[in-house]
Length: 147
Image (cartoon, rainbow, N blue to C red; front, side, top):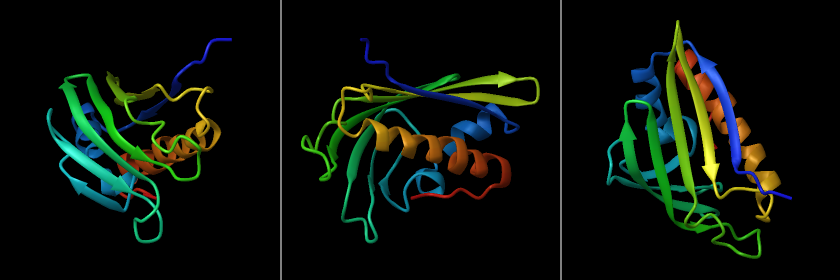
């Protein structure tokens, strides 16, 4: 059985330029505990989760930004609730943004996040919420719901 990478897609009325700007606004939709820069190639940022940011941690580098794609590489990760606490390390988070008639189609693919990882079910549920609810709300209403 093939392990397919996590993938989701949705349409927003926001322009492609707005989508790129707001994807980079990490604390606006993904994590309340954010440090670093997240808009340009070479930027590195870290997100922390938990009440005071003491639980899970992901350190990510912006690898590429083109007119239709953003690529992030997970440099370090810590999820203490799975046996391999660094199972996200080395994975890539890819955002494809395609202009539509009145907005943009946003596609998120997390390369390496597949059914072979212990965190798969919980992590895919989190991505579903963060992308299609929190980021979507930030794009539509300028109010995200970061974790």
